[in-house]
Image 1 (cartoon, rainbow, N blue to C red):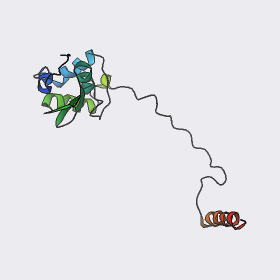
Image 2 (cartoon, rainbow, N blue to C red):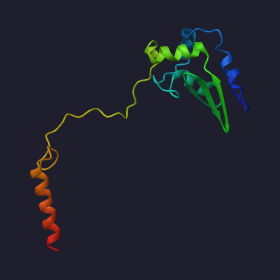
Image 3 (cartoon, rainbow, N blue to C red):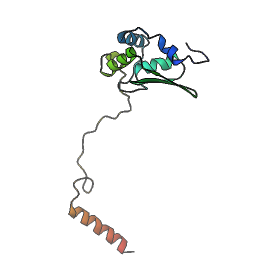
Image 4 (cartoon, rainbow, N blue to C red):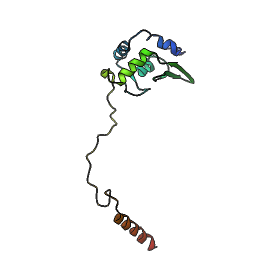
Length: 140
């Protein structure tokens, strides 16, 4: 359904009518699409629609929203699509889950703080710090 004029959002969703959540997951799987659980714009169903139809899709519990240019369409999320997305978010389709992004840093082992850096702030530490500041500005 790609073309110059975007199809009505209800028309786009018509092809999923009568399909079970597992059938919809199979459609996503066959296209090799993977997504992120718990996201409205990064779920694999939204990504499949982004690739097949004009516009950007957001899949929510209550509504599916499509933005295409200056036009925003919104329809109630059909029960079968809602069930598929819910099952995906709960981990029922692990083959559709994208690996975590590479930009996440691995946690580093904690190092001992250097003297004067980190460590507990005690009244003595504060007093010494203030004394150094007073000395620095009193010499001017």
